[in-house]
Image 1 (cartoon, rainbow, N blue to C red):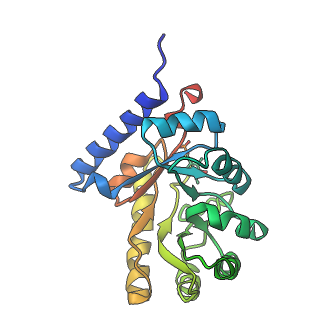
Image 2: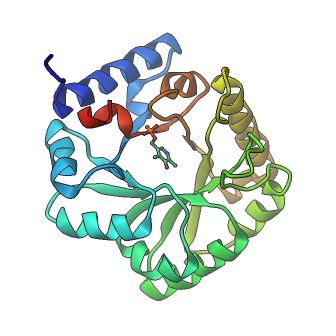
Length: 230
Ligand SMILES: *Cc1c(COP(=O)(O)O)cnc(C)c1O
């Protein structure tokens, strides 16, 4: 049995994104595909780069530091998609393009303080937990407006949207994605011109097409790209 290469798998995702965009009458260029490299080492990650992927996601800060170092010559934009401990903020900030997983005011204040000292402006997404899954991270939707209104006032952070996941075992991930989009719409009208919440980071290997139908602008796909992961 022949196995598909990483390049073929990457192209397959690109094609599926284009088809899903077309079905929803959206522009495929409005959907960023983030290749999640947390399952593989930097040599395998490099093959994904060679296939054409330019946005890489890692869920652990330490793994992001290591891979960003190993692949430092390449034009990769790094996205942190998992929990960030406050003591790892300073070392992470200079490496990343965007943090998807800001889930508390405390973390945002730490990022603000470090970004200020490093003279950076950092695009961030606020992570929400719409499934109520207690082992998932993210803010409770009811606390989102208050926390968001404080975070958008921090001058070195730019809140560009929301990130979320569909609940485990949800047969209908689309309803969770719709809820995230509606939360974004409500938050945008509450915040007015204080923030421009254009981005929705939602959709993974198993459900990215449903997420695109609900307006996702950033999908985070990992296992579907790497042959050894099935
Ligand atoms: C691992 C991970 C992904 C990728 O999941 P796959 O199902 O392998 O595509 C996406 N988002 C987050 C936050 C992750 O931790």
